[in-house]
Length: 216
Ligand code: AP5
Ligand code: ZN
Image 1 (cartoon, helix red, strand yellow):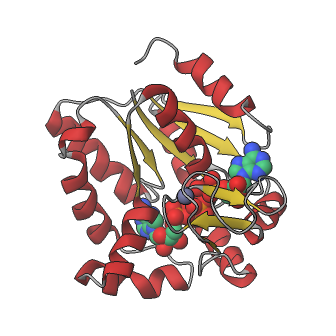
Image 2 (cartoon, rainbow, N blue to C red):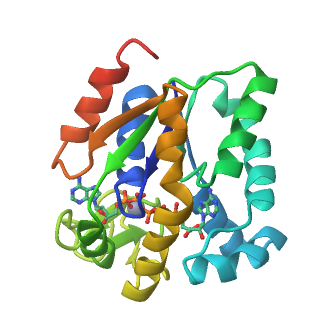
């Protein structure tokens, strides 16, 4: 299975990716997670990316494409992958198409998670992430039964630096300007599948599974 998860910040890409990986055991590639690890580790890429991320802007395409080219060639991608947060510009989509063509691979589909902007702002203000395993929680919609620690690994829950209202609004406006045009792009490629990103519980993953059953 090779899927792209497309949607605004806070649409639930990371949340659905966790569920898809549980069902289909594919590699989960989140460009946001890779970038945050690089920032934390103080790498050259991390130093270049930090300013863009803190202000809610996109990291330049050349850095992202080089990073993804290496990642997609790693052995765990051989049996499939979920791309979470990539591509995010037309330039990245074209680079991905070219790269997959060279590797002789095709995409099964592009999952668009549709969520209104006001819901996104509410969700992101309440999001908490685990420092240990990365699991995603929400103080209103999905609290941890262990309070401010993770149910899975006991790690401390924290709020991302870019989950402040002003930065969230900037990320949303960048999404509408630079990433939303990919909806049309993938529609024209015949790959786009829309899902209602506001469904609760397993509603979204069940709809995705129904659509892509048999693609594993
Ligand atoms: P990234 O980490 O990719 O952030 P994002 O796209 O803004 O997406 P989020 O992680 O904020 O949201 P999500 O859709 O995964 O939602 P989640 O499942 O957590 O990118 C961060 C930054 O890195 C970018 O701003 C940019 O600078 C840089 N970057 C990354 N990729 C790049 C690229 N390709 N090119 C250039 N720059 C790049 O859910 C959100 C909350 O809602 C959670 O609390 C969750 O519990 C809750 N929730 C989820 N689903 C539901 C539901 N159905 N009902 C109720 N609550 C829900
Ligand atoms: Zn954890």
